Image (cartoon, rainbow, N blue to C red):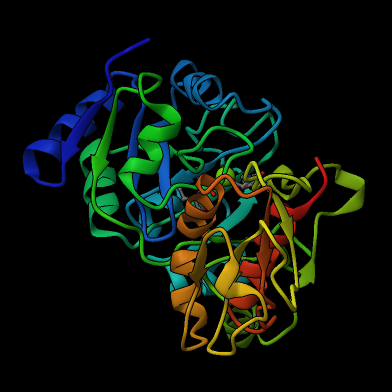
Length: 323
Ligand code: TXA
Ligand code: MG
């Protein structure tokens, strides 16, 4: 057990966070998607600490975060498609899985032994400042214990990881709310490994072709984050609810009321206006709040499958998957 410091989002807090990372410690920090649990990606021992703190299955490769496309180029090989996507969406909520470069310094452990590497340049100014001060790739999965929902503020992080990590940089709530979109550019057609903060449509518009979906069967668990029950509240989750039954908590979307929702054990609306961006930002925090109501089931109103709705529904289906 260690003491977990809550560091302020200022110069001194960031300097301390960078120092902890450089000496092999674990620091949770805000990104525009969710809070990440960071470790020096080049230091396998530090990376091992991430798996231990999260109690995460060790076959999961991690995303390495960088301060710019320039520094990312030393880590991975970007083909034409990867370059276009990096130029269009970095900094931002996109992760590119590319072949490792000969100059790659990301440890084998962070890559789970694969000959590819997951790279992302986050847009959050605090993440950017921290990465710049640290001066090396920072491996960071979401800062939750394995199997729990991703944290979108410092209190969520401490709820799961207090006394398991060295520090959390408190930068307030994350604004995208779902994780980055992951696209593999490994030769051949680019593949959508995980829907996320950049909608599929925006990516397809840049590359002028449609994305293949899902892991490549022959290569095994390409993105083990795609494991069916990854985002799991304690309550059961009932999707596409057209009514709310006695004892259930209600996760609503849009203005139309669901019959029975006035008697719900707890009730939150992802977005009264039907705004998918707002819904994504609220998703994980609302799942946590409804779970905390003690309801046996969280009933979820239908969410459209367009734009960010693809990522929202993906996370909801995982939360609902049988465990
Ligand atoms: O928004 C995000 O992406 C957040 C913030 C903190 O940046 N991070 C995040 O990391 O969600 P994590 O570790 O929870 O999800 C990483 C996903 C996993 O599904 C992992 O399997 C996949 O990225 N991944 C990483 N490297 C990969 C690789 N070389 N090949 C295939 N999948 C990879
Ligand atoms: Mg995660």
